[in-house]
Amino acid sequence: MKEELLEAIYGTVERLEQKVDELSASPKNTEAESTPASVSVDTSKLEKAILAMAVKEGEAIDKLVRLREAICIFTDLTKKEASKDEQRSKLLFDTVNQVKQELNATSKVVQDKLHAMDNTPLKKVVTHRFEPTSKSVLLFIGGLALSLVLSIWGNLTQWRAHQDWEEADLKYRALKMVLPSDDPNIRYIEKHFSVCRDEKVIDDVRSRVTVYEDSIFRYHKMVEIAAYKDSLARKLTNESNEIKRLIKK
Image 1 (cartoon, rainbow, N blue to C red):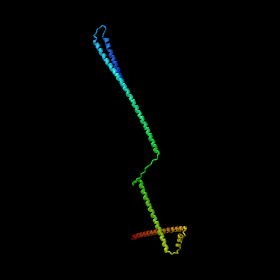
Image 2 (cartoon, one colour):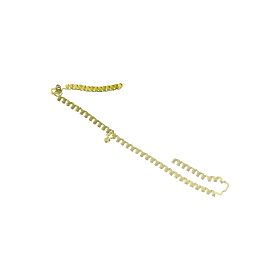
Image 3 (cartoon, rainbow, N blue to C red):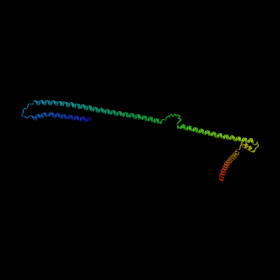
Image 4 (tube, rainbow, N blue to C red):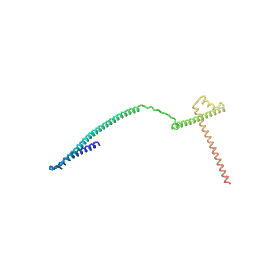
């Protein structure tokens, strides 16, 4: 933009100089052409015109000189502004480089700190909070309730087994009381269970008792089935008799 302005100013100055040269040359040519050698003319007006043209030419020259000085001053100012712009751009570039270096140094320090933090063990602070609606609490309560139920069931089963043992012991003591003291079966049991404990005999007695109890259970089961069948047969007999009685009517 500044170069185009300077070129326009220089072109204007050149055109003004050409105009001045043409104006300065035109009176002399007109005087030479308009005045023949043999004719006497009053030259006072011509001289006045020439003086006026000379004055105008001097003024134009002064204006041109001033314009050239102004152009020179403008050129100097333009060069100074350009140098100032270069200095500003250089200063800006130096500032940017300095800031970049500072940022690089800061990023390096931060990276070193992060690397050191990664290498050092971290102390984690764990806080536990009791929430009744959480999954772990519900699972804990469910497990506690299940263990409580299992414990109650186990204790009840042991209590029933203990009661059965007490009842069995009471039955044996009652039989001992009823039977005579020299009964061979009582003497056999007391000898091998208390006086001279014999595990083989105890196992044999246990197996015979188990077989006896199973036989008694099967006998009672068969008696119940026979009673059910007998009642069913009586029921069928009564129904058949009722049907016969109805047919006879």
